[in-house]
Amino acid sequence: MLDAITAKKIPKGEIDLGRLKLASGKKDSSLAKKIAQLADASSSSRLEVFNQYKKALETQGDKIRGKEVFKAQCSACHQLEGVGKSVGADLSAARSRGLESILLNIIDPNREVKPAFVTYVVTTTSGKIITGMIASESANSLTLWKADHQNETILRNNIEEMRSTGISFMPEGVEKNISITV
Image (tube, rainbow, N blue to C red):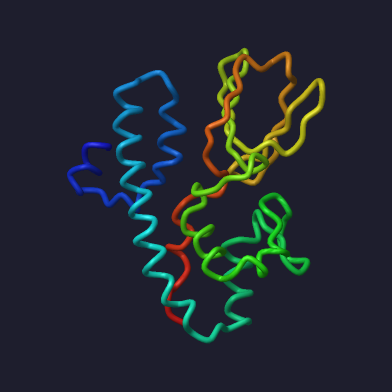
């Protein structure tokens, strides 16, 4: 698959390289190196996508359409004005950061990731691999919020390995479902 991406048979934008990097783990260094090279190239492609969407900031916004987009694309993890789940970053203060900053965080969620929103990979003593964001933890257990929008609690004595990926739980590419035009 990586060769197909490099040969441009599969567009880079079709693959979430952050998730691919996560999946590769640290077992195969040559694979990790290829993914890192593609991820570096992906950062510049994220900037290209940002520049494409940036022109939408110059248009008059449509609150009703914006609420529809938020509900469909963001509310599974974010809450705003009582709509959605408060799993991801709190968006209530986002307005004060400016539209370009908000757009950049949507287009390139891995550019700046607060520790609370980093993806973790947990390997249990039975060999099960669980990926998610820490929802809660105690002295005895850890609860991960997974991509399927479910929590999974793991007893700490059942954790063989736990590592941070440094990658945002928010996937790249959510903009594909959001039109640039109004």
